Image 1 (cartoon, rainbow, N blue to C red):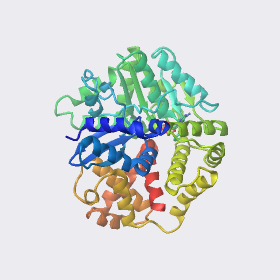
Image 2 (image 1 turned 90 degrees about the vertical axis):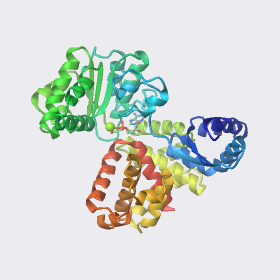
Image 3 (image 1 turned 180 degrees about the horizontal axis):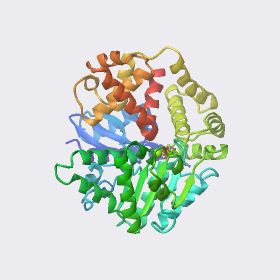
Image 4 (image 1 turned 180 degrees about the vertical axis):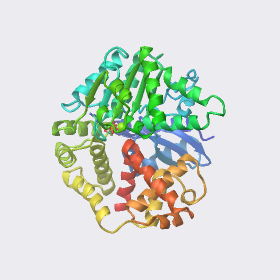
Length: 452
Ligand code: ADP
Ligand code: MG
């Protein structure tokens, strides 16, 4: 039978066949996802890795798997969702950790991104204080800087530092009860608990979940300004944890005093520890980040290319990384040397797509479906599971932004959906793009194919 074993056997064979450096770069982190019929699905860590293995190695891999299986097998590569492989599941739920890593990775809730560690956070003058404070908090939670409040513009490393704190604390004290939550999730869960309060003790469960932790990390707290109920709940949550000697870390796009409609009592709580900001990276830091990102992607990028990109993109690390990913994929697809000229074309392709002839609807559907390995019928059909709906929303977003289609037309093409559904989908993707660099890379990769 086609199984994880088949993949492991094939991987053994590939290790002999593929040059050592390439194997380490592209296959070391490849993991078996599922097998069925005559197909095997393998996950790789990044969009770029997916492009490379698909283009360079798909046939070789298919041959190795077919041989291990003893019959023809097709191989599909997907990009791994950003989740840590192992426990602790109680990041999502304070129940005892499950027996297997498998169970942990399927538990609901927000996880720590395995890429967001202190080792992979590059320090420069613009983020030195925030980094030092975060490191200190991770070494001695609840001791100094409580709460630690980090603020900056988008894409400058706040979420990265939060996850890094979580990881470092768990590495030193695995028994720590910690919770990482985007503020939007906190607010939505609370509103849900309030609405359903009459039906039993959801609200109590909500409180237990947030108030009985040793380390609470709330991302993007400017979101609290939306409702009074959530400010009230945050106030009591904060006090409960603080008084029990727990650590609180918060992030926002602005300092506490500039968050509109934030109650004074919350503001003064937020300011009681250390408030530290992160500024836009200077040229040196941008260069270092690009070098690190390239190395992590398994690519070797010259100083000229790094300088070219570091010169062009100055305000946002997420965009800097996006530009590099786009350049790598572009050069790979067109068989170009990694030179500044390739980077220039890759980036100007972006401008062209925005200014010139918009990609056709059919092309967007095909490219999206291919990238996410989801049949086009599903995109156009009735399925509403989270994955299908998410991919469909990406298609909506691209049709609207890049394809310049109208909302009703997009709805019509996508199986007769209402224009408000389409608008909701596009807005959802826009919000997610501010937070999820994986999604950003996915969309970049689809755009590269569309510009072809
Ligand atoms: P924010 O939460 O401030 O919007 P993120 O933490 O999501 O920003 O960072 C955006 C992207 O930039 C992430 O991929 C993150 O890993 C990366 N990043 C930001 N700052 C750094 C840094 N100093 N070193 C390495 N990567 C960084
Ligand atoms: Mg963030």
